[in-house]
Image (tube, rainbow over all chains, first blue to last red; front, side, top):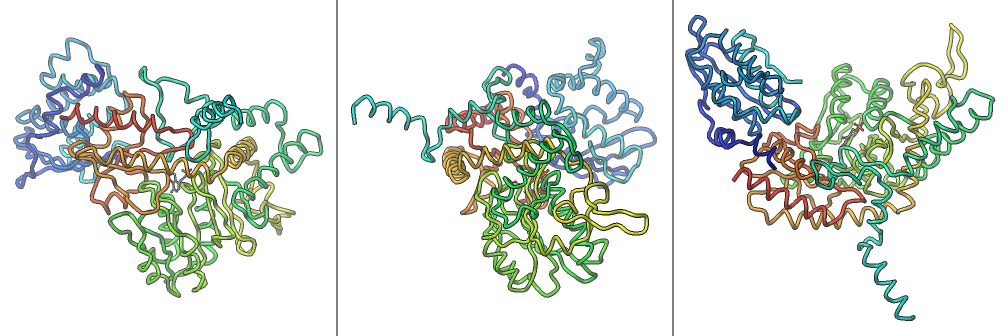
Length: 149
Length: 424
Ligand SMILES: Cc1ncc(COP(=O)(O)O)c(C=O)c1O
């Protein structure tokens, strides 16, 4: 049960129930769809890029608590950042959820550190990273949908 | 009768279920069930994905490799003769299991998927023409959709789909309307893996045969639960997988009627499927070998034979009755959980309880139940069109086998309550 609470932290549950930036973005100039065929998670990420900066970001779709909360918190953490900065946060986040994070880096992640429990549940890593992969695809301007398989 | 024997009698009876099976004794046959997961006793309710294997099957496979291993149908030495005899004995066991008229109507394949693909690639390639239609249903597993899509694309034929109602039952009147002179084949599941619905195959086959349309039945989810009699059903093809009927993975059966099998071109070319080869011309072997190219999964076939014997010895009707009781009990118990909705409420169901929980994604249900030692399946169950039909991305699915108990259903119900607590 303690492991479960590590995974389903209150912050995660709260974001999954009331996701932030959960809407379409009519003025978005980048967009991508992400799909996890294993569990049917499906999200669309909308991004408004201004030069190299993520001026606005939102998402829509359906998925498990982990994937939804991850998408929600991702939009908060990358808004206003440059594409390169977002890329760097994702790299740290990926280390965190796969259990490869160095402790000093964990602090850099701020609120995203609540996802550390995912590392105890290897099959859920894809859920936590789906939105991030989709964001990458959106920024790179790939129009095809990304899949975690 | 003395009181002592009366007492012993009632004790014996109390260990049995309404089906007359001694489930505790049966559980002893399955070594894998004696383990804990995350410190809790394993409650295995993912039987529709694959069932566990009894000692009898594991022993048969070990005995084969330890004492019999040799290639079949080619050696004159003792081991080869013995291996061939055991292999062919398993074919007869499968023949009896399906009540096929002839053992040469039993073709060993990798599983239901390969059985269906075999028919699509041989019968389908030879018989289906541009403008023809292949009829399937809205409750098919991907393995009974995609092979037909590939064939239709190749041939310029059309895939038609019989709809289901909100309970997950096939709309038989619609099926009747969709059968036409253009229909080259009806391919239909016996039992739905995502919903548990049982289709009235005998009645459906009769409808199709009135128009001379052959019928393939996907029996992957029926073979573990229902007595199958291919002659009574009168279906033209019947496919199932060994691993869902307590047998090993990688082996299954395709049954086909003799006349159809004889008229079909071979599936794969190679050894065993020919009777003579020159560079000018090859004469194909007789049934069933025409469809069994190369060295088969001999140990798998022998293991499958042992599994089908195991099922037959227990009695498939008794197994079905026990599972029916379990499913009814589970349905009753989960129905009172608020926010829980059962997906698939057909009148006639076998083996499967699919459900969704308000506000909780099935994937999260699966993770939390796993922490309680409970194995269920979550996702679309290789049946995305069904999920779309019900407007959901996925379900949680508990599926039962002969070794499951009402106590395990109680553990499942407690587990679901825990899920609700976490997400409260
Ligand atoms: C209804 C149905 N058909 C076909 C299959 C495919 O079986 P296999 O993967 O063993 O070939 C399954 C397995 O899940 C099934 O449930």
